Image (cartoon, rainbow, N blue to C red; front, side):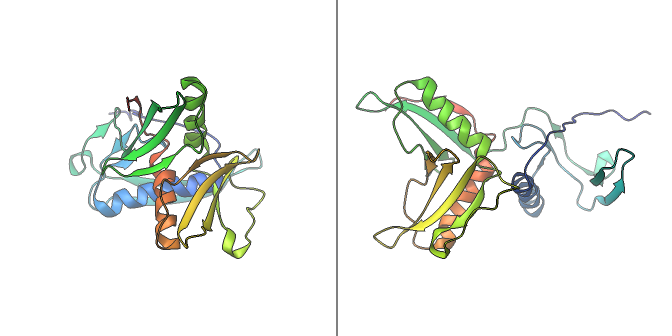
Length: 218
């Protein structure tokens, strides 16, 4: 029987975005959940309990380097392949506020708002453009700690940076700042510790890319 490709994708991603992707795979494997095959989590596969893991590094004829990480197992020992999966545990909600401004918020399935826009937009289209920027930039964004005067590396990130900071009330917060200086998203709350704030932004890194978008009424 010949091999049949169910899913294949190739795209250039930053080191940070790749790290976020592998973190999602790691979390899924640890929990015994289906593993996302793409960044958005629209294709998943359920590996066997003990798949064969192969790693191959080679120099290519065109002067490049290739690194392949592969898992393999008998189909009867694993679960299903789902090509219409939704693995994000959050949803983007777009709504019009009391002042007629359009806003978005990223709501976890547990009911918590884990991110929102830092401003109201003049149109729904602009609000959707704002959340799409978060979808695109959050996974690969570097994280810097302003209390340590850190600066984002020049390479390996996206067009935005997560900034961790302590507010005037001693709460820890994060904001996602685009390279143009605009705050394109932030946490909806202050956290008691820096660790909790990091967990919050990592949830956005993981869940934003594949989160569905819904219009809601206030």
